[in-house]
Image 1 (cartoon, helix red, strand yellow):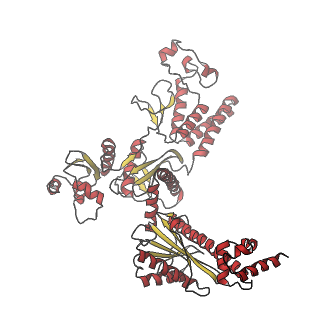
Image 2 (cartoon, helix red, strand yellow):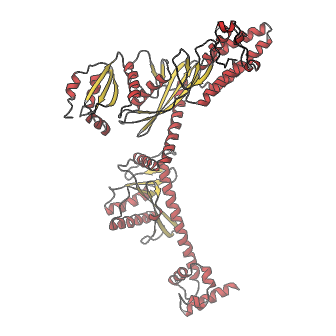
Image 3 (spheres, helix red, strand yellow):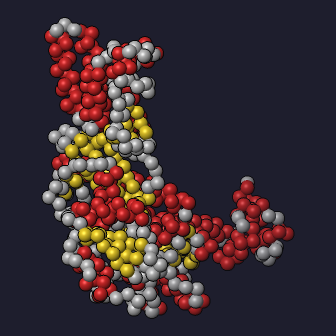
Length: 601
């Protein structure tokens, strides 16, 4: 910072609300921020006592000039910051990832206004309603309008002089009943404009008011025995009521609110916006924000609120948010609902943002598998309270059959995926009888004594299939080898999927949908499968060997040699004396042939 005297620069900055801008040595704008107190906020960047992240330190090291703009209120600063970021897109600011041009519904500024959709806004006095993030929703609304209100679709200049002069003739749309023929004075301008007023109310979510007016007109028509007109009104009423039933999500007493929710990842955040008018959601959109300086959720949400309200020209006085927002404005009310209809709205927004986030992450991780791996390992590190990524995980499991044929199995995961070439089996050597704890102790000791001898590298995480007893047995061996402090060791108990830590009497419970728990379960199940497969082979071999030992002159060692050579009892049964002599002596060969010969009779 020797090239920039920030203390001198701070003297020129007032204690007022505004927007500050940081410039680098090349006179490039690298960051824009807002502040309730410009001097205090800018000064905080240069306070070495604050624990700032690495990215912010890099930003500060590149500042060579500071400019600022004073505004009247914090809200003005909030809006100005948003517009400047969108215009200049500085390197260290949050990137609003939204390159789409969303469609609007336009009510054209002309006699007998047309209604259609467009992606291009022209400042000609026309009304633009939207934008619509869902094109299908926009077309559904336009279809409802077309079915309910006969409007013109032609681009004729329907001025009063032109109409009175008889310059136009009705077209096919009139014959089909889709237009009332204002071009030939078959429909008055007042009647046409009353339809436009109703349509504007519908687009603004005020369907209830339109329905009440329509119901009163319908009752009057019936009272005056104008049943044909009443029938037309009833058809319109039913269409609108059906649309309202599909659109209303909360009590219509919630007249006009904006709803926001946020979901964050390490590098990205996602913000959902719902615009609610009279209990009806009339606009909704979710955007993605790319973090630049490890911004907090509060900072990101403030930016997104400003962006959405500007984009949708929102004038709502109440904004529903998931947590308190640090924006002071007497004209705005920020609500963090705890229950009721507003809470339901917030939950709906949160469901939308979580779904959008999952879709985006899944899509990105399919294209970049290594990103998913890093995210998974980072999540596991946090969930399991580790101080390093569990790139190398090993899991132990024991198997025995009524105390006989005890075996241990170890499976290895690297970068959260099975590494089958590293799987190992252990024939238990020092344990007599069904002692699961002693078996685990032997397997762990033999495994990591060899790892240390061969210097092949310790895992970051060891998973023991079992509860406190098996975990204590494994830890005993790790302590004996002096490596108990170098790795994280956990035990997983099957009944409730509890995770046990050495020295901690209370188990850790992870969410059943947690990706960390799923990986640990996969490890456990894979170790169990691998161990059972080996155990069955050994048990079957032992059972067959026992059968061969019934033959006179054949002991355990000879039986195992025969099975190793012939692979199965069936092949031994089918072998002749000459083939058997490759393994046993003449007396034993005659005994085997005689035994199986008698068995056949």
